Image 1 (cartoon, rainbow, N blue to C red):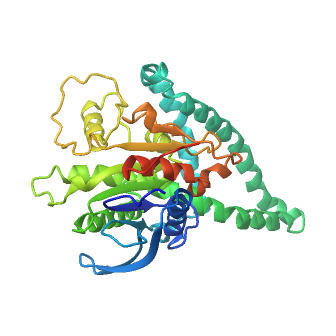
Image 2 (tube, rainbow, N blue to C red):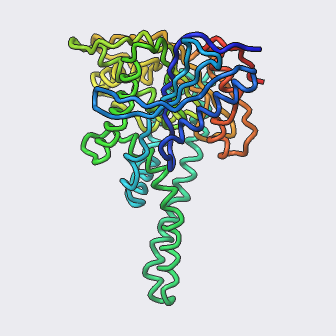
Image 3 (cartoon, one colour):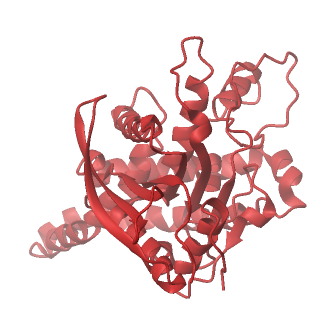
Length: 388
């Protein structure tokens, strides 16, 4: 019979897009962990615990797994819940404008970055992004006539007894929850324009994630911390570590035990797509801005620009997480995820799963895929791993 893993570990888990409720993340991740323990015959106790965090004065609910027979080892599960911040904050019209702007920039970006494509082409680095580019361009061609047709419904309704207006309202009612609940989250979080009203929402999501990670790091009983993110939550997890890396580089840096952070786990991650289509990029002649942006997004990232600048500026960032282990899980039937090629991840740590779910549905199937839990538990908890 397998034994409970030794040590005192905390997992901080960040959910992705969609209509998430409080404790959904704790439920999904917690059930995955206890199913793994059940399969391996590990006897455990599961408890709901409360803690008041002095910094900020907020009370947190989290889960603790301990050995059945007692002992000092434990596994804490914490969730970063951010869905409430984006709820009903963006309209379908704003999403439509965001989508049009994004699609308009796709072809231009690829046309202007042929050198980048050639650089990574030999290692199959951008194959998926090129396929996505074709799909998005096809979507853009389809979107414009569809949008024009919908706009005709309103004047047509005057000639057809109001059926056009009724259909328009029906379409908006059916589509709005999906647009605002899924695309809306992406539109809000990928906004890096400080002039946008959504920029402050993005900053608040990051502040909440940082606050949770800081609180867990400050717990003197915790020995190691693993940060996990699903879907857009993987982008938030990446940005959280990147922000900590920047803050650790400041002269008045907060004294945090960053060495407790032992790993990053991403699943269903769109990080490559985010880097290509939504991250800020410098113009060809903006060689100073390009270097600054590269240094500000430098946590395990590969270069997105290969133009040699006339002057190289010194990098102020201390790369405190340069050697942090990072494992990424993806499935070919998940259109959001993929092998992360634009980051410094070893090939054996970009793990393709066989979730056995239809295209699209696979994106939410990671939570119940016990072999994934077995694999990262083997890496970070010393338990036997078998992806099967």
